[in-house]
Amino acid sequence: MLVGWYSHQVVAHYVGLYNKKIMSVTPEVDFGPLAGLIGVWQGDKGMDKSPDPDGTEENPYFETIDFTAGGDLGNTESQVLWGVYYPPFLQKNAKTIAFRQKLNLNNGIMTFPETTMLDIYGRNFEHTDENLLNLP
Image (cartoon, rainbow, N blue to C red; front, side, top):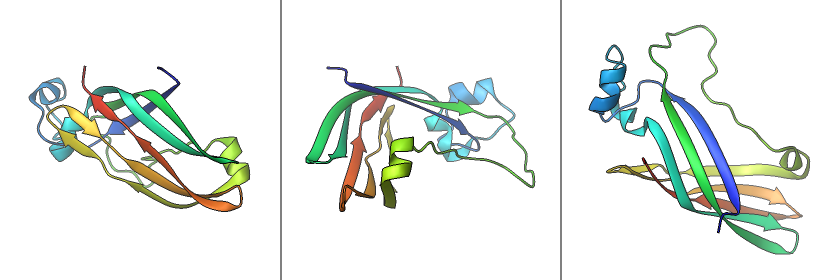
C-alpha cells in the first residue's frame, strides 16, 4: 500500500568506498568513503510514526533518495552544504528537541533509522522514520 512518497536530493562531495562506476564518470574527483552513496536509491518498506493529538499515527511510504556527484566544488568563504525544509505546521506547532540518524550501507542496501524528538500537543514525542532502500 502506497501511502506517502518522500524524495531527498543531496549533493555528495568527497564521498567514498571507491565506486569504479562513479570514478569513471568523474575521474578527476576522489569521492573517498562516500562514493558508495552516489546514485538513486529507492525503497518501499518505509514506516513513518508521527504524533497525533490522540496518540500515534503510523504510515508506510515509498522513498527516493538521489545522491548526485558534485564534482570539485572548491572552497569558498561561504557555502551552503545542507538544506532543511521544515513544514509550516511544525514551525508553528512543534519544537524539535533532538535528532538522531544512523546511516548504514552494505552491498547496495541502505538503511537509515532516524528519530526526531518533538515537543508537540503538550507532550514529548519520538517521531521516527525507517526505510530499506536499494540501488535499482
